[in-house]
Image (tube, rainbow, N blue to C red; front, side, top):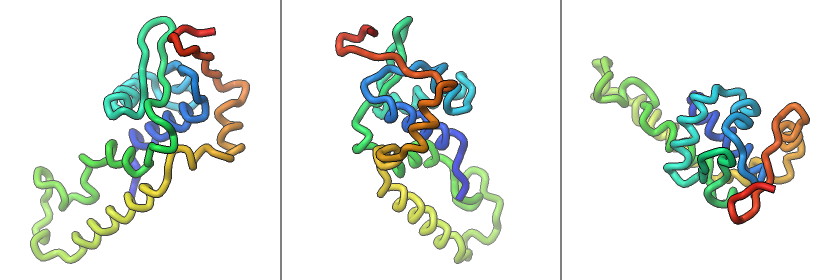
Length: 159
């Protein structure tokens, strides 16, 4: 199974935000830390926000932050949100399938089971489990050349 770049970047964004609880992070900071273009990242951030994984704020003091606790974010759900419209193989797409064997193929149900098993494993992983006690990851996200998020107070202004 191959992971799309969108799902990969979405996971990076969530890890970066989870590593900076209580802070708003700029899209530019995340793009640099996650090695992604701001334009592409913006699309992914919008989708994550629509799904409730992120909160977003516009304007000079805008930014992004987790929309729910890291313990409540299942990586399998995130991957499904970004990968569900992509068929695991050509034969799973009614629009683009050209395989003449689809009606008698025994590999197709096995691939379907393998795909579901993949997501079931990811359903056991929370965002919190990816960052908790992960000094290496936290070090990578807090290196001096990686921009640090700005502090946030509850009123929505920065200190």
